[in-house]
Length: 116
Image (cartoon, rainbow, N blue to C red; front, side, top):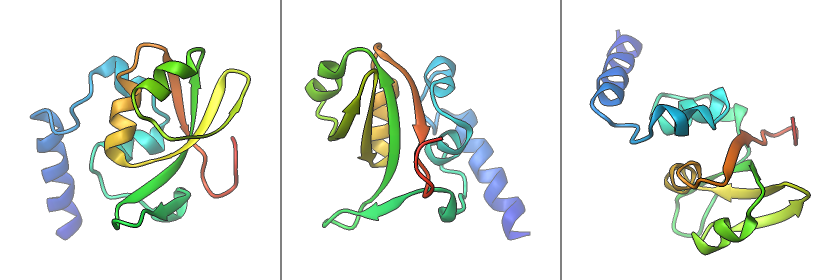
């Protein structure tokens, strides 16, 4: 019953704009990150998670873009850069911000096993 109610609330929030992302922005995310920004209950073992000093969780991601300066200008903390992608550890709000940037083509969950 609890899972049913949680799922129902999640669907209502998504339908009412709770995810705050357009379909195009949402499609930039892999399925695990789509779940994360939709406030759906997630299995934390699927993510590389750390906690910032203020207690906010951050998730390891790979951001595919050809304009790294746009990420930097938006205040996105970048860890490393290889060709046309960057790695980062982002909060859910930062993740929502990244997919709204025009130069970002895709964002993938880095997971605990590294790049995929």
